[in-house]
Length: 196
Image 1 (cartoon, rainbow, N blue to C red):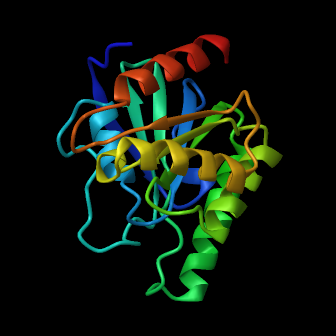
Image 2 (image 1 turned 60 degrees about the horizontal axis):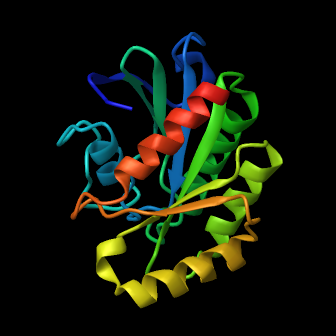
């Protein structure tokens, strides 16, 4: 898949603000500071389309990006940042689950986890939501440049175990800094779009 065009098409806090249902959507979810914006910019071949925030937990909206006028990448709010109040983080949970539960053109969700650490309780909860809505099966292990090859292999095994992944589930290590892994991810997304 070659990304020729990508643009922000909607910023939403509720279903009334979502764009129309004309395109298939692939959502991206992950903890604050896991590298979601960097991954989106890498995937869409744009330096600063998704804003990389210096303060984790800043994205409080669902951001929709139209890609090649064919499908959308949907950036869900980051979760798990300790300095955000419980009422705000709870509303993000409602926002995320509301989107996952009620969006008929959503065909897949990508769970992002930091390859350096074991998935958190919130990562596990997020993945269980995805599984509940039939959107599981694809995990991206970010910051792959920060570990050695042997650590990478061991940590991917740990991620598989902690999230309860099946053999058929895919884990792709990606480094936005070194620009590695995104071609494999684009190939997988292309196949998902053709199936869905």
